[in-house]
Image (tube, rainbow over all chains, first blue to last red; front, side, top):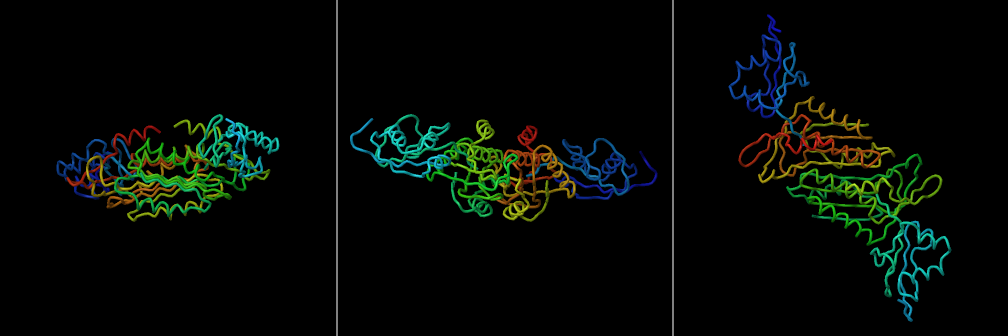
Length: 89
Length: 89
Length: 151
Length: 151
């Protein structure tokens, strides 16, 4: 999964996660071009409470607006999003 | 139930019964001041098919806008109505 | 509960009724549900050229009032409006409006559908359809009665 | 089926949406059901001063589209419109509108309520309530999930 060249992906945080992380969107240059690589990079950037929120119950991860499970590979320009539990209406 | 003096009541017909009877409202001078008296009087006034329609399935009789069952006494000025099955909306 | 019942020959304006209800709502109402019945141009496979609706002034309004009272006993409602047209109506004309406001959406949906189902079977109206083959007086259908009895 | 999905910060006008839908209806549609959600001034016993609604542009519209597709598979519908507001909303503000037209009223009622129940649980929105004690992010409640799972 790892690559020698780095990959830049956009990472977005919504709702309570946006507040916990203190950021809306960040462009991350990741070494390991996958979700685990994003998490590893975030671990070196975020405060502990922000990082913990991303692993909270019901948090879902999207790649290019599609919810994914587990780890998936990423390409340059992909958009990764962390979504807390939703509620409309 | 019968009285020597006559009693005038208004009799109304709605929907298909209004069409079958060929009349909207009629003031009837009845000898027997009750629903049976109204029916007897109508028997002498209406054509057979109109009369038959009044005894059709689902026809309800009202006195002063309240549905009644069987025979009830009437007073002068009462409004009797024959209602076919209803449907709204 | 604010309740309003009208039987009229004139067309109604959903926008006006909706705005009037909204103006009456306090901060308690979280849900408004509206149902409008529209005259269709067919019934089953038969073409329908129009309808004639007849009512019994006084008794008809009272029959609708009983339906609203039952709905209000059963669900928490803040407002209910029923407008039912009578007279000659053509295809695509509006025929009936039921507007309900409630604190919670489940109550508003249930009450609006309950009122509409009971209007079909219990409200004092008579409906004649103008079909190409002639006029037909319509009774509540078996389906209508089943829907009502399902409540 | 004509379908329209909008997520906007501006308020919507029920009258305008209703009129536009009615203008699209042919003689086939016999029933229109509208649901409007309105911001309440309390949640349980807590006062609520307002809401903040957030969405994920693109994904949110797609999540609503999936709900409409499910409804349209399940019931015979001629038209469906969903408008959902985002941003800051105060008590008594309109928050969501679901408008459905169908040949038969049972389908229109069921589809409208189905869409609304799924908007609460499956549509991509995040809601924060402003309460006197502070802001709270709200998740779909157990009751919301039960309603959705009941379909």
